[in-house]
Image (cartoon, rainbow, N blue to C red; front, top):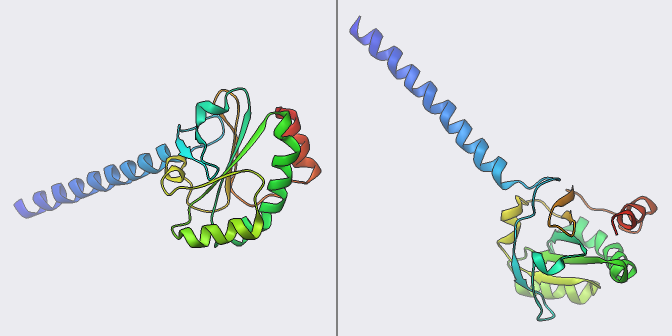
Length: 171
């Protein structure tokens, strides 16, 4: 009889611990994933052109923050249209910042030489974690007040009429 009581308490204890563990994991993951409507996590980074930029530096403009990697085929495919978007809308209040998560600086440089992005670029290995980004490309459109307007977790044809109309409506 005594062992049956202990067995029940052990099962109850293990069950409670399992529920707590699942909740802690869920809370940790949920807090780290930035979604539309959230305030964008702040950052300060030095772009390849030597300019130090942080989220407040884009005040008054819409920031298109794109996380990418040189080994990512969809990232390669969207870079030309992202460059065109950056060129076409820079004077209208859009800033495009591409942050590479490449660990290999040589691979990063080869990508830049091959595609010559027409937007701010930087290689940084931690900022993407603050946004909960672990698959690439992933893009955040951030308004002038620092709020995420839209999160796009796939490659985009940035020159498509639907996309350019949407971007124009934000400016």
